[in-house]
Picture 1 (cartoon, rainbow, N blue to C red):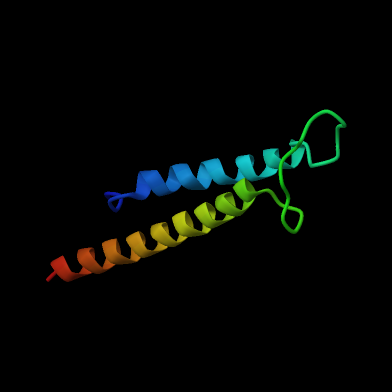
Picture 2 (picture 1 turned 135 degrees about the vertical axis):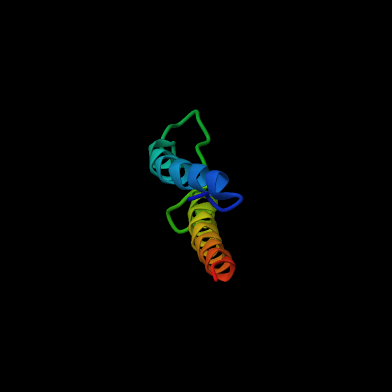
Length: 79
């Protein structure tokens, strides 16, 4: 069975987002070091973590929609 168009890109996004989200917790927060600025935090998360969460949800949705469309197209071709 063939993958829907864009599935590989969505899988890469799903693989990238969780480790990046987790690794951002290791970044310095403002005030952690006297001579370094650190990364801004909003509600305890960096802007990159918000982007990673959105990327993960968008890629998951793209895979679901692509799989459903692929199934509809396959079923429509069968007699």
